[in-house]
Length: 443
Ligand code: GLV
Ligand code: MN
Ligand code: MN
Image (cartoon, rainbow, N blue to C red; front, side, top):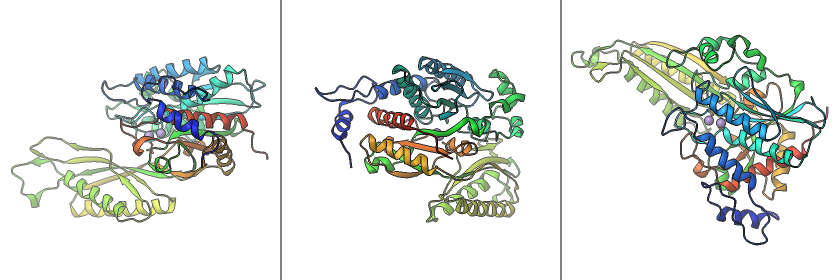
């Protein structure tokens, strides 16, 4: 399975502490010093320290911490020989010219926003690795017959304003301007947040790029699942990014005294929501085709121990390996929630806040990635992505390819998310090979 570098890879893995980011201690005569991995881990830790919560990593769209992170990333881009700027939605954009200025680009990217109480690797690994690859080319004075652009998308997670992929949608020219009026949990509209960030909400369209400017979009990302670990492989080729539907539900009943209203006379919105959540879980648990459903946020009002909840808001996230399967499941969930609301005499508002079809990775890019992986001495294992990625939006203006890097225990969207230094290094070496051997698809 492993070719010439097998021994080196194994030695590196046992010789390095993933946390300390020190240069790998290699035995005499060994070849590889994991220098890309060292730089990546150091920067992951530096970026991971920029958070709006003291003991947790939370960096959401248009926050002042996101702005601080943008400045740090742009500094790294400039150090790597790129020009760098913030675009009209808050994406950080770096450009490394090809043999001639103004050539179409190979775009490399991922996101630099996080979920709440996040891990450090989801998103930043792709941005930081791409910068390290460009820095390596720059150190060698190497220019390619195309430009390289590195983009850090400002919103992939959709934590703040319910709609997601806002950064990549703006670049793909599919940003829906009606979301500018949506408000976050504190009542701040996206329009206001853009102004606070130093951007003009009436000019988000300026972030859009044309298909002719891009030769392809490539993203390196942590796997966020346990498959590569089970395969004992540091990297893999992504076949497709699974589609997703997100909904926002609001049930309204009647608030009342917890001591005086008999159970039969209550219109308890939270008890209704609990039944809905249970129905979603049952549907997914009994499905044999990989359907998953999550209620990740819930708020009950007025929210007091001795008051029957009168209004409850919650979110639903539904995903499945095929779009048809997901759509059928969403329709089923909607029917069940409607029935529960009716039986309990609760008013229901149910809105689809996000819908993304499955995004297949381009065959020619999968092949280039597989060649890069094999050239590093690993077998090119293919796997689908259950998580969403910016490629889902970028596919509207470019062919998409993705490299997954193994993560420990399949843990993600959790502070324990972790990538070994040697795996970060392997991912970078594969990406560097793919970049250097990249040639635009003919025709
Ligand atoms: C992004 O991380 C998603 O898949 O929700
Ligand atoms: Mn991500
Ligand atoms: Mn994520």
